[in-house]
Length: 187
Image (cartoon, rainbow, N blue to C red):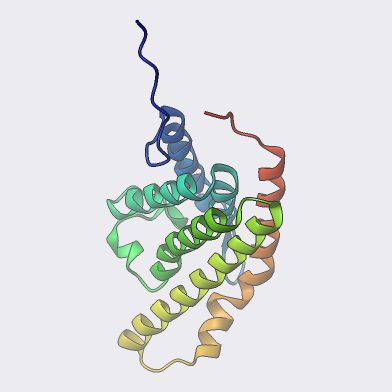
């Protein structure tokens, strides 16, 4: 007599989940290496984080971002400028990298509670990005003040946030568009 399969819990990972998480972490790394040289260099890293969340969903997107950060923490050169290691992760701008995990957690929470309609995804990504900016800015200020002395909030925002507002909005819109067009197979 054939045993009936038990329904899978939402807490388990299927082989496809693990594969998509790994692929998304690799894409985030690849996109972090694509740099547009300006006074403040722009990468496609944020686009890849947005896309991973919007395409994979909150849980798997969160674990893709976590995987990416863990790879960087152990020294794999996955961060912008082909950097890796705790020095890169815990440096002045490391708060923005760690803020990606907060972005992912907020996205996961909001979409788990409110659903995954396109406007909910946009709200969740925006809320997460704002938290990422806030955390990264606070982190930058603390480390900068420790090593260089006083700096104003406006100066840090002008260097670390304001130049990225419009590009990040465009990246978010593009990630949402891609997520709407790309459908992953159901389990």
